[in-house]
Length: 193
Image: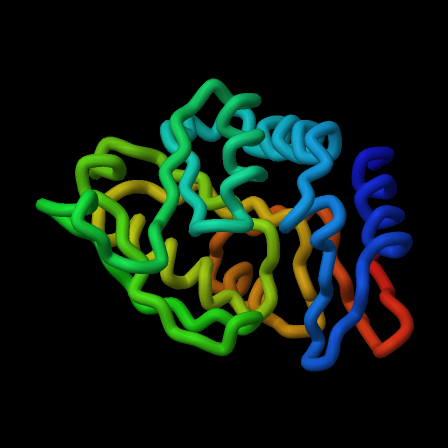
C-alpha cells in the first residue's frame, strides 16, 4: 500500500486536470518517465499476477509501453505492443481490432502480428490509463482472436467514475488498477479507498 499512496501523491502533486475529464501526468508517466516509479509499478504488477502462468505482456502504443516493459522485466516475460496503424513490417497473420481513443477522439485500427500471440499464451494486458475501457476492449479482442487465455488487465491509473473498469469486472475480467480515481472535478481528485 505504501507504493499506491506514493503514486496517488504524485498524481495529486503533479497531475493536471484538463477540460473533458482528461488527467495529464506527463511529468512522470506519459511524456517524461520517472524510471524509479515505473520500475516500482512493474514490480507491483508482477506481484499482483504472480502464479497466474502469464507468458506474454500486451499493451498498446505508445504510453503503455514503459509500464508494460517494467512489468515484463519484473516477470521475466516478452512484451508485445499493438501498433495503432498497419505498417509494412506487420504482415502475414494479422490480429486487428478497432479502438476509439478518448484522449485523441480518434478511432484506430490496432494491429499485432499473430506470430507474437498464439493459442498457447496466457496474456496480461498492461496500460497506463483506463477510462471507458475502449483500449482494453480492443486488446482483449486481439487476445480472443489469437485463441489465447487472458490472465487479466493491469492499469496504472483508472478513472473509476467513467465506468470502464467496472464494466470489465462485471464481465468477470480481472482488472487491477494501481490508483483508482472515483471523482475528478476541475480542481480536485478523490481516490477509491
